[in-house]
Image 1 (cartoon, rainbow, N blue to C red):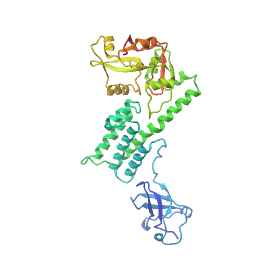
Image 2: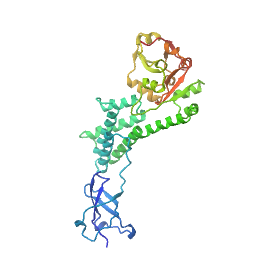
Image 3: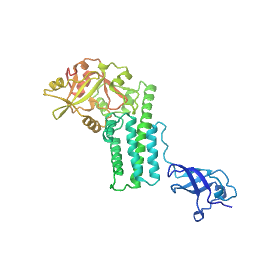
Image 4: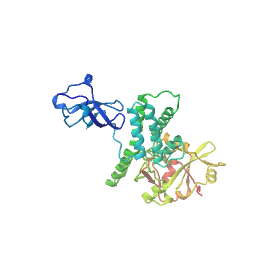
Amino acid sequence: MARWGAKFDVDCPGCGRQTLAREADAPHRVFLPAELRPFALAACQSCGQAMLLLSGEEEPDADPDDLPARPAEVLWPAPGREIGEQVPDVVRTELTQARTGLRAGSPAAAVLHVRRLLEAVCADHGVTGRTLFHALHELRARGLIDGRLLGWAEELRELGNEAAHLGAAALTRREAADAVELAEALIDYLYVFSPKYQHFQVRRARAAPNTRKSRAVRVETPAMRILRKTRTPFVVHPYPHDPAHTKSRAAVARALGVPPPRMLKAVLLYLGHHAVLAIAPIEGRIDEHALAAAFGAAAARVAERADVARIGEAIAADVLSPVALPYLPSVLDAGAAGQDSVFIPSGRHGLELELAPGDLIRVTAARTAQIMK
C-alpha cells in the first residue's frame, strides 16, 4: 500500500537550508513502478521548492505524521555548480547567499550578494578602503582581470546599485540569474582556471625547455608577433604567476635571477597632451625633466593609472610591453642600452622576453638618453 505525506530531512536547493520536506499530497500523486518506490515527489516546508527525492529506507506501515523525518537525497533541482576549493571562504559565502536569494525568489537579494561578492574579491586581493568602482579598476591595473572581465564586473556593480536603491525598477529573475552566472565565471577565472593555466605553463616549460620558440608561437602576444615579423631574435622566459598575487617587476627579476639593471620597465608619460614611452631599468625613478629634455619639451608628467589601463585594454595586454607600442615615441635609458641583453614585459604575466638592446632600439625606434635619477 502506497504511503503519502512522508517527511524527509533534506538540504533544500531552494532556500539553501537543512529543512523538512513533505511528500506530495493525494491530488498530486504520481504512481511509479514498484522498483522505483524509493523515489518521492516532495515540497520544502520552508520555501515551497518542489523536489524529486531518493530515500533508501522503507517506510513503516504507520501514519506519516507519527514518524520521524527520514534522510533523503535531492535528485532535482540540482544545487548549482560546485564552488572550487581554491575560492576563499569570504567569496564562497557571498556566492552561496546569492544563489540562495535566487532560489528563494528574491532577485534583489541575489544581486546584492553578487555586489558583495565583488567587494570580497577586491578585499581578498588587498584592495580596500576605496569605492568598489576604483577597486575593480585597481584589479585591472594589477593585471588580475582583463578589460572584458572588468566590463562584466562593472555591469554587476551597477546592477547591485540598482537593487540597493528604493524606487528603482524591480529586477527580474532572469537578470539575477545572469548576474549569479557571471559572478561564478568571474571567480572561476580568478581562483580556478588562471592558477591552473599558469601551472600548465610552468610544467610545459620544465618538460620541454628546448622548445621555447615553438611554445612562444602558441601563446603569442602582440609584442612577440612584432618581434617575429621583424625577424628580431628573442628568448621567452616563463615564470610562475599567481593571478591573486601579481609579481612586481623586481619580483620577476628575482624569480628569473636577472640583475635589476637588465630588467626593464615601460613607463607611460605625457608631454602636454602627447604620450611618450620611457624604457628604463626597474631600480630608480624616471627623471621627468631629463626625459622632457630628451624630446625637446619643457616638462613631462607620469600618466594616470586610467590612461595606462586604457592603452593596455586597447592592445589586449595584461602589462604594457614597449615593443607593442611602436606608435609611441620612445626613449631608452642610456645605462640599459649598454647591457649585453635586457628583459622586457611580453604583454602577459608569466612570460618575459630577452633580447639585445640594439634590437630593442631598432624595433621601437627609440632614442637613448640618461633618464634615470
